[in-house]
Image 1 (cartoon, helix red, strand yellow):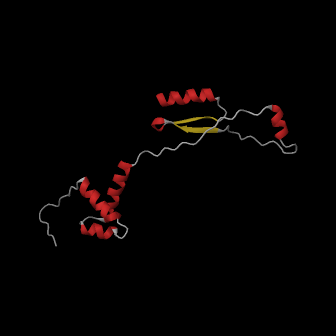
Image 2 (image 1 turned 90 degrees about the horizontal axis):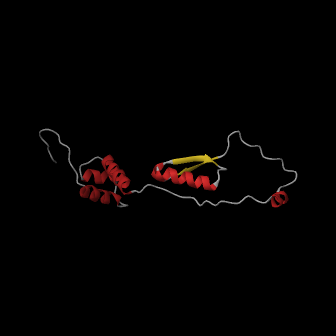
Image 3 (image 1 turned 45 degrees about the horizontal axis):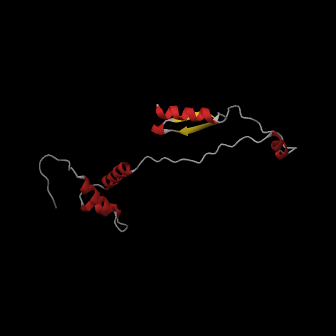
Length: 129
C-alpha cells in the first residue's frame, strides 16, 4: 500500500511508458481493469492513450472510385435499344449533382452533366487554391 502525503500531484507518463502499458493491455488474455490496477491508473486512461496513439498513427482515410467517361450512344443505336411501350422516366425537380473530394479536404459540387474538360479545369483550380 502506498500512502501519499501532501498535495496531490499528477503523474507524467512518458510515451514509452504509455506504449508499454498499451502493449500489455493489448494481450488477448489481459483485462483492461487488471492492467490499469497494476499500474495504478484508471481504465479510461488506457482507452484515452489508445485513441491518442491511434490518431497520431492514422493517415487520413482517402478512397478513390474508378470513373469512366462514356460517350453518348448514336441516335440509331439508342432507338433500337429503347423499349417501345415503356413510359419515359420523370425527371426530378432538382438536377443531378455530384460531389468530388479534392486535396485539402475541399469538396467540389457540380452538375452531373458538366463537360469533362470543364470539370477537369475546375478540379485543378480547386486543388491549386
